[in-house]
Every structure is written in C-alpha cells, then in structure tokens.
Image (tube, rainbow, N blue to C red; front, side, top):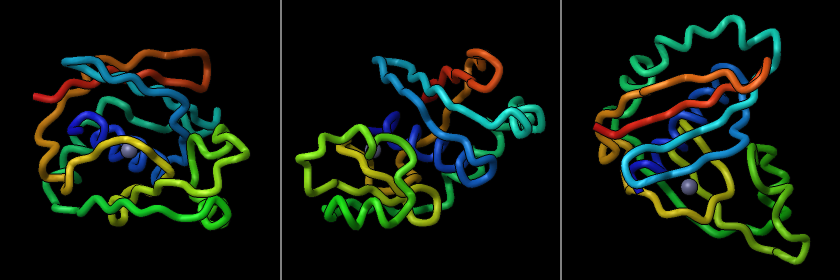
Length: 142
Ligand SMILES: [Zn+2]
C-alpha cells in the first residue's frame, strides 16, 4: 500500500510539473519500479538527481487519499485519466477513482494508505534511460 501510494505521488508530481505519463509500474517486496514517458523537449530540462529531495518534501505534508466509484463517462470527461482508462474493457461502465488531494487523480483499482504521511521516507536508487524519452526509476521505501 505504501509503495503503491508512493507511485501515485511520484507520477502525479511529475505529471503536474513536467506533463509526464506513467507507462508502467511494478511493485516487488522491497522495491518498486516506475516507467515514465516525457516529451523530448522537457526531458532535457529535468534535474532528476533532485527529484528524491523534491518529492520527499511533498510527502510529509498530510494529504488524504480518497477513493470513489464514478461512471466511465465521468472519468473520461475529467480528462485526468493519465494512465489506464483507455485500456479498460469497453464493457466496463464504472471506474474506481483515486484522488490524492491536489497531487494526483486517476482510475485505479489498487489499495492505498489513507494519508500521504503514512508513506514515510523513500530513496530513488537508480534512474535509467529507456530510450530517448523514457526513464525508469527504481524506488525503495526506507
Ligand atoms: Zn492506486
């Protein structure tokens, strides 16, 4: 839950600041990976070595994690579905929607902590290039 919620915070932060989209994520027992796609102009500007510090400042400011079920149409109209809605089966009429106050909102069926403060400290262990416009982050909770 802590890892999953952390991935929301990181991808939400990067979306807000740089318009990046999370393209895949993976959570293992003691680390997580997150792949993000950036536009070519933006990726050169980002100081990835400062990312851990910037996001670490966001997490201790308590923000609530809300979940609700909304119609697929409502979710699409929000225009904030940054990852998976287009992959949802056409037959699915309701979407579970997750919002972390001002940080992130998206369709998600995962399990989350109730507040960002429950995530705790984390480290970005590694940032790899995956082609010219993608990065893969390896993340560990401390
Ligand atoms: Zn989630």
